[in-house]
View 1 (tube, rainbow, N blue to C red):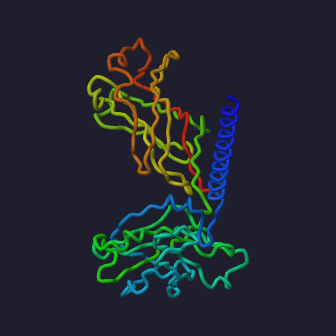
View 2: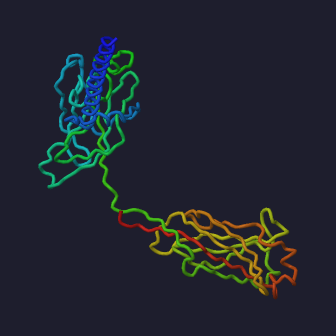
Length: 350
């Protein structure tokens, strides 16, 4: 019995040692894998975000066509193109037909773009690039665009960027895919410089801006014709505004109600012309009490002038013409606009 217990204990210890050793090895492999940075490009994890899309347009910066590409199939050394200019800088396309083994490119075509002649650039130079690399598909008359959507920063410490896993060799050499028709293959690059904006457009919402109340008194109301009448323009924020109405009604309130609309007009000199947010209390004032008729309106007003927002019915004609109500007094009415919030746009430093 004791012998069996001792054997069971020994087996358990051996199992624990093997399990611990395997776990230690597994942890070591995972940890080392995460910390590995490849020489030519960037971490292997970044390649996992690469997208590949076929497009009709040829690359705008560089195209390289290789005849008899089977001649260099399996070669490990890179092909470096002639120098090309793009966006005021000089570059080379670098191609690994058998993959860049130092950048996780095993069993893939690897493509890069390297900046050249940097000795003439100022000290501390850097160039930010939106980089796309391409593999030609003559069968489809398209180019496979390879990119990961991130901006590549070229500087003295990093002069070459690209993608170790541009396209799998199994796809590239598969005749049904069409990348090597007639033993001819093609590659390309598109180098777009990303210059950070020095200015930005800043939209500010101002509550209760200065001079935000406009009063419009309309005399001889009963003599007005069946057409739209407009107030003088008034300035609130960076934009001019006006009120408008038809004394005989319009739209859904035609013939039985008085409408009122708030219109955006032009901009003051040197203002930044953009859509403008306008929030306004529109009132038909009671000339005897504080029981005004009021509606609230808020909208984005387009850049073009004469865009109006309002209501077809701020008061019925029956109530308006009731002398005891106090809205029509001595054949006059009073509209009021109180702009409670308006947007102002400025161009400022980024």
